[in-house]
Image 1 (cartoon, one colour):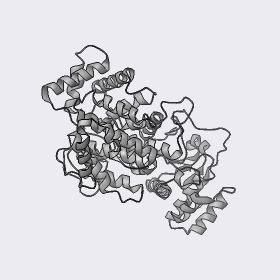
Image 2: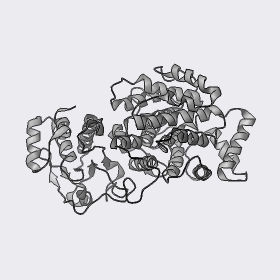
Image 3: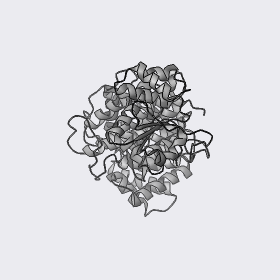
Image 4: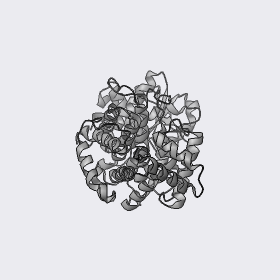
Length: 481
């Protein structure tokens, strides 16, 4: 399925948005809500490091690592692979496990048959004994299913329900997974938030109830639906957080407002914020996730923001494509000349091309801001810590749709430069060829330092003779959107 850059950005935002919501909610799980804004300070029930995600994202990554291989998630082989990943995670990586999920995964070890059949039987047995298998643990791990079959809503629904039923037999758990996965698919492909879009895909007996539950949550106060350990109320709290903070202007800031509201819903804060983050990420894209979150977010099995983007995008194109972004080892090109020019306003900002990535030691930089697509081995650059090498999503195209949050991203990139400089670091900022994106961010940085736009523009043109410096990117960098 051909995808425009905008759709790729949105697909990339699904796992990244979920992981950031998870890490933001971790410190407040089953605890007092934050005073002011929630921050990724760690702690929680883990306890977790600052920026570390919990079991919500961990289990989602079990699904994503299968989907990124291009395996049909609803097939027996796909379900076996997911079931195996869940079991391996429980035995070797889980920092926290829901009671219901742990019970099913543990009981399944003593059963015979294929991996997914063992889990499903254990799940049905638990439901038969207790009638209580509608926890939020299925909903939290299935948003990535929404990008596994972007042109086939029936396949999305089928996979979401099958993965939910591995541990959660109650039809409400499967319904919630179907609804949210379809909403993610719609957000990526159509750029709109519509949780009711999947009502025709849920179990017929519950379709009317789901319509009422969604309507009740739309624009409601998050946290007003009771215990959000239940899949229905978790969905309602996440949807309430999204809809009550939507100002209808398409602003990237909605992602941050929505996640803050999700955490304030209280109780199972990491799960509700993770669920909300996946859909907000699908709507607004990786480009809407702020620097301070992308810089910090990390977790099992040793992944960071760039890895989440690779998994999401690979899933959206039906599996990794050897030699192509985002799974290629490096995006470097020896034919592109290095640059390494000091910023005319701040010489401790070095202006470069992608070739300058390999020259971090030579340039004596301690941080890097990348404005172009990188390969898996490009980030972090040699000798650089993961927290000190940050990527930004900017396209060269003039059409507004290619960069829907251009002012936000330029401001965020400039903010990253200012933060690194405040930490005493010398910084390389680069794009691929050094002729559009990098000069634009250099211009925004100078303007943000208080330099008049005309003077900043003239200085950068003189420092970088031959740059294009025209069009929407340049104008927004100097004057704002």
